[in-house]
Picture 1 (cartoon, helix red, strand yellow):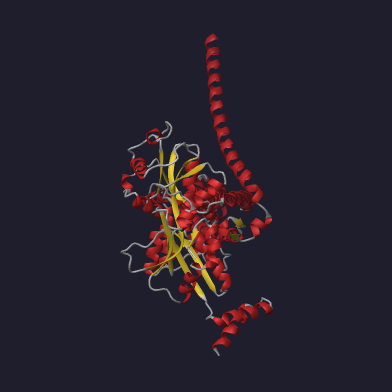
Picture 2 (cartoon, rainbow over the protein chains, first blue to last red; picture 1 turned 120 degrees about the vertical axis):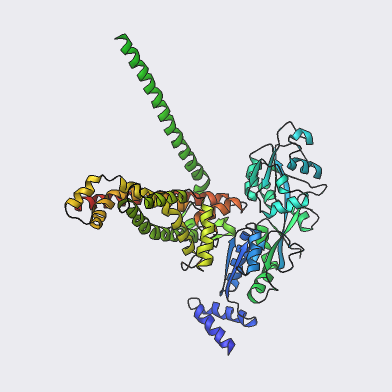
Length: 282
Length: 289
């Protein structure tokens, strides 16, 4: 009986579609319970374009489902998941050890690389150099093996999880960082550094690699001995990398679980790569 | 005679200097405008096509078009104008015609409006999110976005309309009351038609500010780039789309430029339609009354 009702509902839904389509869809849907309803997902503006694309593909597979993606930052994604304002939150970081009241589901990885202008002769910087530069102790490239040129420090705006990750890795306090330019997003960082020969900044490796490949005059610096490449982020050998995480209040079930499983599956690896992130290891 | 000649010579030198300053200021403005438009056209024109306007975005907006975004933008603007115009004109009429010059009501209201007009748009965005989306339960929707923009546009609209009404000479009011017209009739038949150009200017400033709005919309009408099926749906506005393409999507620049070109064309279009309507409507009302 239930199957009959489902079939009838599907029939009404797809009245405009051809009979052949109806037959195949109905056959697909009898194997698993029909998914229907609306999912609201909020959070990180870094993760949002990826999840929106995954959502579109999910909607195509399950015509009764609507997935609304909203942005506002990782903190907001976690807060909204916790308060129930959103079914799923998005965060561009791993959950902290004290965030045990919520569940995290990693869907992809992202690496942060230090970038300088392509015209800058510096080939690598030590961790100590980077810390000194960001604390304003070194203000000229000649002190770290470069030419005589003032360093323009590009930092992210407060609240960005990239900044959180960067500051955590170098054990810096944001209030101590002496920034010349404060930027919001990866693209803005790349634009700032490509337009300023003395600038140094940190952005997503996926994005930086793509832009450098497109001829944007920027250069990714290795971290210690590890080159800043997508491969090294995937095999987790690159230290400055992060997870893109979906967050739910409780153990996900029903529609949220189906969506999260789909977002973690191989079916979306092409979408992850299209957004210049690194898919989960297979 | 000689002295006069010298002063005249000085005067003409001064005139020449002033003219140079004025001309170069104008030239700078025109050059800046041409540069911006030229930049958009160079970078965005080849992406612009009929299918760009009629297809949905794909691959996070890098490819595909902007059809749902264009529709959402127009719906948001429509709601904002439909709500703001009557409230704005009524408030301006009240302030200008029914309160005393220098009276407390007018002073306090005018001051609050001027402060509101200068409030950063992100504040309106957060207010709209808290009030319309959460408190009124409208959620992320085109309705929430439109209402938030209406709040944002109101101060500008009221102040320009008020200025327009104040600039109508008092003789007209006295003439109207001498002819036995009620205050309401004088307002609808004489004062408001006379102030129509000011109302239109205020509306244009308002629409300009509204259409260019990102911060107030990202938390109210939201980020969803699906074709809206009702006003309850979340819908991404053009400015939000441009912001997202430039800031969050690597390789989205070309479509961002094309979208910006569409946004500017849309503004020019709305502007010229409004100016045409104002001229026709305004002159008709004055001659008819």
